[in-house]
Amino acid sequence: MFERALNAFWILLGAAAAAYAWTLGLIGASGPESGLFPFLAGLIIMGAGAVLLLRPASENIAPDFPRGQALWRVLGVIAGLAFMAISIPFLGFAVAGFITMVILLRTVEKSSWWFSLALALVAIVVVVWLFGRVLGMALPRGPWGCEAWRPSGGCSPVSASS
Image (cartoon, rainbow, N blue to C red; front, top):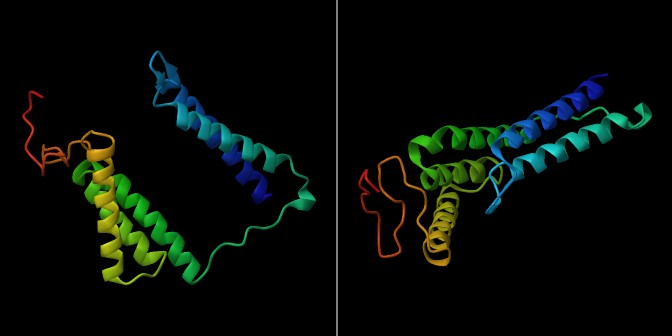
């Protein structure tokens, strides 16, 4: 019975996500809009829930919830993602991503502090390089009113008029 209710929840969640994404717009004059990816993800979640709901009850297996170390890893992923979602408006993407990556490397991979910090730093440098050099655009402006990266060198304040 619990599994049927869980499958119905996934159907409702997918339908709600798809309905909200529809309001964001799917395809515009210049191509895909911001609602296309969430709309597709909502349809996939809804479809997977429907497939699971329509399976015969004899094929259902009681879910085995994580315990011990596995539970701590799941909680670490949830904590990392929650931290990133909450902190992006205050810290900006690069700083929030760096801290989240350290949290995930420490809790999920059980990496040392030095390895976690070094790998997160390398990842952030690659993202900054990708935006600055390959894509030719700056990272979104941070909370301190400056662009996160300029290919000509460093972070410089941006006036309110720009």
